[in-house]
Image (cartoon, rainbow, N blue to C red; front, side, top):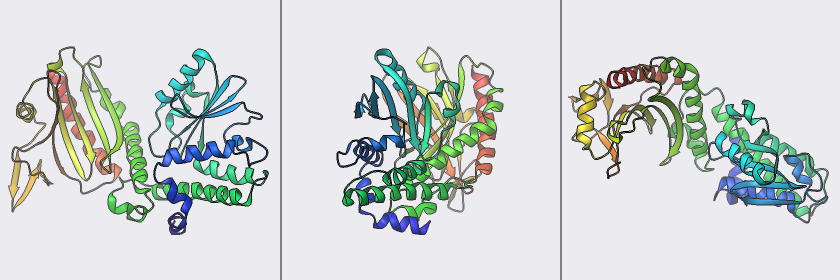
Length: 364
């Protein structure tokens, strides 16, 4: 992996890509497929679709990354390397196109194929990895004519794509622990650390869904009012995982949420209430129910639920809130994570979510 990292560090083309990773790649693909210097014209369309003599190729048409038109039929490429792909986005493209024109099929690109691509209603979409894209570009380049300068740029780009794929897959291969900042120091200079942490958080969410979601859903007393959701994302230069129970009520003040959030080395237990309410009231309510804990001090160290914490708030909790009649009050405590392995974290999350479900079942 050291050779791949050094290659990207030395590449001027890769340096130009860092401003906007997904936008850069989509723009480059559009150039490959429309450049007048490359003969035969549109030869690189074959990276994604087996089409000849296409009518036009559009960028950012109705938010679609690439739309290739032939005989009034749209063939869509959605590029995802930095952000997480969502099935709903792909289905919306498909539905919107079929209202007025015709949707032929679509390609989703990225590093890892998402599970939803196997769903029956995604049968018009195919996944193409960055590895396949790089290999296809080099293969097609052997069959086309273009200036030596453009040939060298295209070759350089293909190698960049292959190196990005190899670095990320190597970093995440057999990973069974959440990646932290120290694990990605070698990727910071080429700015792939964020992507690796994001993919790892998604991998952990998938692990949680497979190992515990069904068992916990069976414990919910009222599934018409309650739902369990597992998600992951990236904010403030760190990835996060979120496991939450949503209690939906028509009365704003009866709605609430309980959950676990993992972010930036913190294991967070959280509660959410809505409406005009004081944060301390929310904290006291769920402390009485055994969800939150008093802070203990031992030898100048602080502990929550017997676990070391760096929490410094005098009132014993952190908060995020919005004001108004439908205000959002996110209250949480946290302790420091010592073991980032999927197995250890999932066991802790499972026991805490069981407790959260018990609290919910006693309230509704």
